Image (cartoon, rainbow, N blue to C red):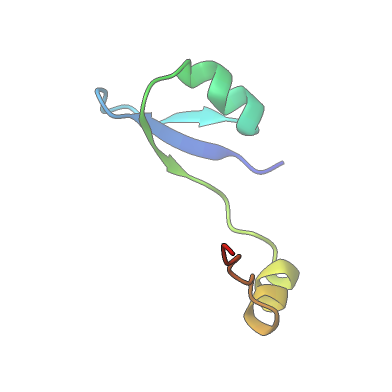
Length: 58
């Protein structure tokens, strides 16, 4: 399980959420500084060789 660490902009204390759904429930619309866990090395390697392409508007 990867933990998401976040801090509300109006508070000093860091808090922890267990997933994105839990994070949004705890924030309840508040702004926060969020530290997401790193993706696995396989995903990072894939994105180096096959970067996401930008979508162009016609």
